[in-house]
Image (cartoon, rainbow, N blue to C red; front, side, top):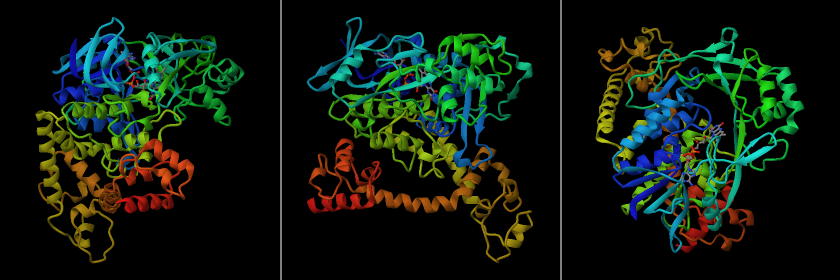
Amino acid sequence: MKHFGVVVIGGGHAGTEAAHASARMGVSTALVTMKRSGIGVMSCNPAIGGLGKGHLVREIDAMDGVMGRVADASGIQFRLLNRRKGPAVQGPRTQSDRAVYQSTMLRITEEMPNLNVVEGEVIDFRMDGDDVSGVILRDGSEISASAVILTTGTFLRGVIHIGDSSYSGGRMGDEASVPLADRMDSFALPMGRLKTGTPPRLDGRTIRWDILDVQDADAEPSLFSFLSTFAPLRQIACGITHTNSETHDIIRENLGRSAMYGGHIEGVGPRYCPSIEDKIVRFADKDSHQVFLEPEGLNDHTIYPNGISTSLPADIQVEYVRSMVGLENAKILQPGYAIEYDYVDPRSLNADLAVRGIQGLYLAGQINGTTGYEEAAAQGLVAGINAAHSVVGREPVRFRRDESYIGVMIDDLTTRGVTEPYRMFTSRAEFRLSLRADNADQRLTELGRNLGCVSDARYAVFERKRAALDGLRTRLQEEQFTPKQIAEQGIRINQDGTKRTPFQVLAFPDVTFDHVKNLVPDLDNYASEIQEQVARDALYANYIARQRKDIEKLRKDEQLKIPAGFDYSAISGLSSELQSKLMTVQPSDLAQAGRIDGMTPAALALILGRIRYLE
Ligand code: FAD
């Protein structure tokens, strides 16, 4: 029987990132997945990034992960979302050439040292008492492992729904994972059902592009990877159409035939990514919704109509699609559908994504109640690093809320759980001014290096950049200028007599780097990306200083550990609801306890008092 340090089940976005992370850390790793050709498949939208999600991809890349590089290699429409808003909430996004994304992910996975791809379905775990010690495949073969990471996405007892027809499937064209779901049942973990949906795919040759509005790519692509220097693929535009009153009438009249509204689906869907049926019902006063017609590749006629995911019967899909301008003759290549699947309540996990009470088992991705490739990949990274750490006997790694969106997501999941598929938003991060997409490397690459998952090549690039940033920041703070000197550069400033450094001046409204160039000579020796990043740092410097104080306060709280097995029922005055939530989550420290849904300052004070009493 073969033995690996880490076995990863599933070659989706969580699985590939987990397997690469574990292999990068020098641990022998096997990636077991149903189909080798399914590695890196984008089940739904051929796009990476967006608001909040783009931050996650940059953070994965800062830890030397793969998603950013693959997205850059396959990007066909890079756009920086929220460009007009502050840099903290801007999100890089690209549409991807679906086939190139997949083939690139497959190639770099097969080429990765320490990583073996095994094709097959895992139907059970090898157990050593209560501990997981490997996997059993459908062909009867077994692989032993010190740690196993489960990343089955939408496959665990997946059921596909189109209208009133339902059948077992992991996604269109793939079988569901049922025996493994049965094994998961035997662990008696809290589990539930969630659902998600996808739109019909259209034949681009049957769309009247000439009458549609278009949306172009940015002239300058915002790439994901800190290592990428250019976008290799041709950039394309996408089309825009709209639903109209006829579309809405067709959908309204047939709501009862939709799988979701016809009562065939019990799982909860993503509120922030509603189906077209949902939109018509929930936003009944709106008479039109925008639909982006996104090409799935440079050599592919398939079009992904973003905004009309559905579980209506195929004939109704044809009718409502053809009611939209430009789509009058559109041919549907694959109908839209909804899928329901099992997930595990992520409050059963520790912050390293290990399942509590089952030694050797980690979970990452959609199985933890999230939705989206980026959320899945970020969890894969965390599980991969931690599983590898457990194999070599190192301490679990905890990502903090104040240092990364990854930390925000893991903490949200393991502390609060989910009531619907969880996706990332910038509003979830309380420290978002310092957690920008552009500074993810400055926040995380050093940490990744210390953990052993950042290569020499990346670290060398990072160190050069860090030196340039430090140099420029110092240069901009060496000298102070009078308000008169500053005003001479065309900058509006109160003549209050206070001298300021050019770095402080950069925080003024509408001041750009060009304004300060006459104050400090030779600034053009610094690359434009270094100038822009320092200007963004300067813009937020005052807010960030204030935030840092908050962070220090939070850290003090975090230092107060709650002993394992702490008995909350012994605290009189704590509501039974909170007692039960605390027993389920088992927070490791006071700060984590403070983030539990429904927690009050008074309840925290009771817990604090009890810990101090027992000390
Ligand atoms: P997946 O990408 O699903 O990968 C799971 C992998 O596990 C697959 O490679 C599979 O072959 C493998 N596998 C499963 N069971 C076994 C087993 N027993 N043995 C071996 N291998 C196994 N996300 C959004 O953000 N917005 C959307 O609108 C959206 N809509 C979606 C619609 C549909 C119909 C589907 C299917 C998904 C949708 N998603 C959407 C979700 C998105 O695809 C997932 O969030 C993402 O792919 C999750 O990544 P993952 O790695 O967890 O799982």
